Image (cartoon, rainbow, N blue to C red; front, side, top):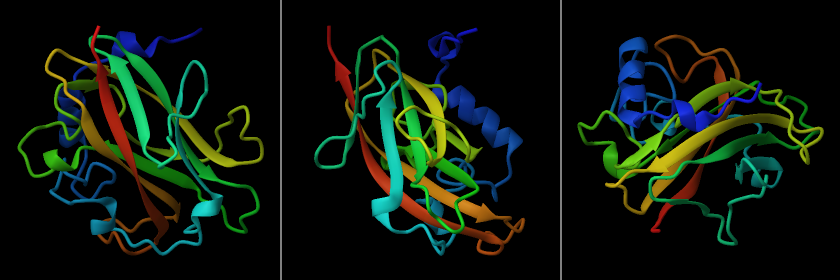
Length: 205
């Protein structure tokens, strides 16, 4: 059975309000701007893992239908959507095969840095609805063209409302292994932190 993500699309503020009630301030990735005013994951966690080399690290966003990358020559990822329409993309994160110790889980969030210090419940771009702006997922997903890769793949649907404008986000990513110590973010967990620029573009009819 195929699930159409856009049917379940709700304002980002509603999603994140629920997270605020359900999670503690020590949790990640909601610790960035939502449960605390941290600027990034690196505010709490150290980037001390063995996966820091960019050449073997996979961070990409694909169109769900075509499986084509939305990353441009400059490395920025552009998600262009007609106003009022929905578009689903795939967040693809991982490492090329061959690591002696591969990451166990990947954590990520899409955040508008200009919203972190505000009182807005959503830290996504204002006026944009989104159903999954963050997640933490165990490695092991499969995707054609990425055979033998330690990977996580998850869809995200966005929709620009009447109030939406072009915006610039950060895709903050942590590749992790180990077990975090509750209340001691720099103990137990090994991780590497990465950031990618994401451009949201509103296409007018």
